[in-house]
Length: 267
Image (cartoon, rainbow, N blue to C red; front, top):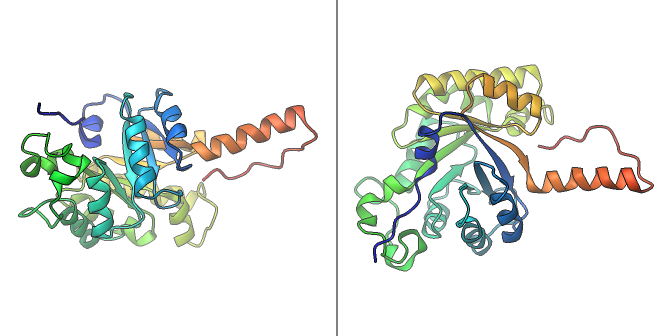
């Protein structure tokens, strides 16, 4: 019996009347991913770049969240075409690629996630969960319609080329990472510094003008609200490990012999 895949994140975003808020899943745990998936959040990010995730744990998390009305996005460690092929074959429909700073990089990524003649993705659908082992009709011809590609701008140079990056056909949206952006601007650890915020907003303007959705990582609630008011269509507002760290610290301080330090940066 033919199977149908869920809509990619690009379609979910386009069909939503409001911006979408998500939670970062960094723990590598399918159990934690399932807890987050059932929270009511719009989307979640399974992180292979900074989280302890390999192919097996990523697959387990994709399977764990599949029963819930949430859209999973996988952030790969890099734009390596082999890594992209493997994660797509796991059945990930939505990819976020970090550290994209030029339109040329973005165009290469588009080619890597599409089958020939549109790109260079290796063919293994009969062996892979992506096509449900060839139970999805016409997967090879339609694969690019089932996959959405988002790129992450995290450098000052990337902000400068945001318009060109967003204009690349096949890039479905641009996500800004204030942490590495701040570092690239000589402001390490100062994600809400006015110059960093101004750079993100300048990037927003360029991406939105190109007709693509802009997103951002913003665990600080005030920063998240400000970015939403400035046009962000998708945001990450927390991470499983950060939520656990801060919540357990608060309980330890309330009921134990612990003094909470000053505010800790959460991203």
